[in-house]
Length: 202
Image 1: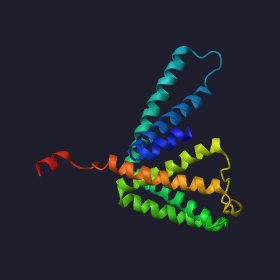
Image 2: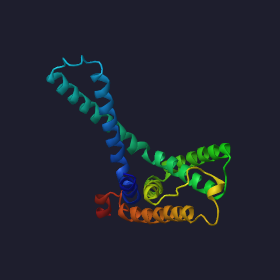
Image 3: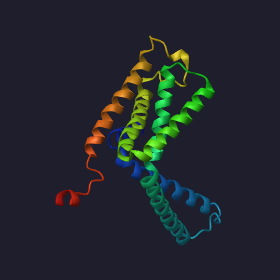
Image 4: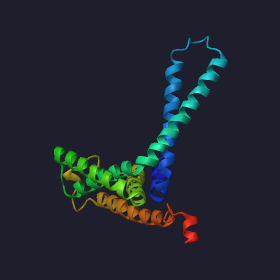
């Protein structure tokens, strides 16, 4: 799952984030409505028609939630991506700066998240491409680490030794994938937002 989601975000995150949020909202809301209402139904005596009605209602609620989530992603998706990308970048820098103080980590992540969110509003497409690529790279490499092992469990100085080839290998993979994924997405979605009709007439 980590490899699939991470790979999707690395190379197509600018587009897939909209559908991903919608899908998550659909399944979570549908499941929540069904489980909650089903718990109030009389056990053993509920008719098949009531169950079908509950399933249909849950699906309808799921579609409504997916629409709202997609609309939110369209209007505020870059802000969310910018915040996530800022926090990921802050954690990456803190790791190699050998910072293990909790309050410094929290303040740095909050500040980086705020800056990332502001930039996300200003540079829509670029932030979506670069931000989702960074987040996807982290998720993808984390998935690889499940099979390779030796993933750092926390921001700890004990992991920051010259002999720790795994840490530097993971870090290099995240940086490399982020750069490659950002370039690929910027090329794939370079025409996004361009009015083809106006471009032709001009």
